Image (cartoon, rainbow, N blue to C red; front, side, top):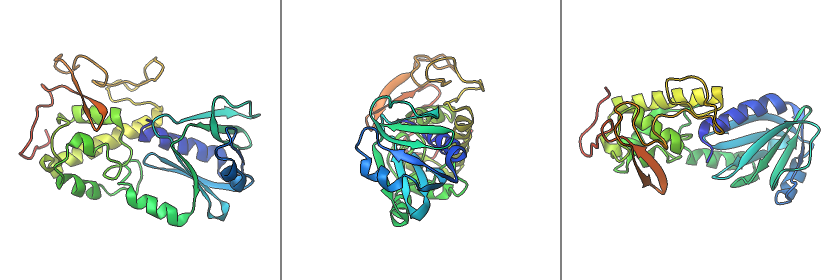
Length: 268
């Protein structure tokens, strides 16, 4: 599933490409044909991201709401538009570029009341200036759920995905199974600050980078990570343990992230 930085990067790029333009919108696959016919020819006023939700604001208070889910993809190309590759749910065509969105979990038109309901369900977004970290801390410090689950709960904090979850906890020396009630305000501030820093870097580089190397990796996915998908910890050279939280894989170095179950932990 794309993490929050990917959606914010898309919103930033699409804002530059489409804001203020009448867009031609279609559904090559056909599943969004009615929605596309309602939107085509309307002016795209702005594009924004909230957590993992991508929102295209059109005239007449129509909003195209996209959530990519596990398998959705976005492709950007220069006009003229070519034949669709795969099952393209929705295509947006502007003056210079077109965007194809394949396989989103959500592709729908909503209006302002629907947007308000969506916002009520989503936790503070680390990448937005209006995010209130206190709201997230209040949820975490009262919960016996594992911090590894809480960080992935989009109603607690919006934007953190599976890779960032593992990497942030390793960088802060916190075991993923630590209950939320053991997270002090001090350590939460460190978690929030580090997560914000990493996601902002992800938007800038268009890749997940959690190591001290600022450049993207020369691999298909471009990520530079410390322990996710690795067998040895780069800090202590100890073995990395892999397990699941909420059916998603987690990696941990239990030398660097010792389990702490009952007492408050403090920032180092």
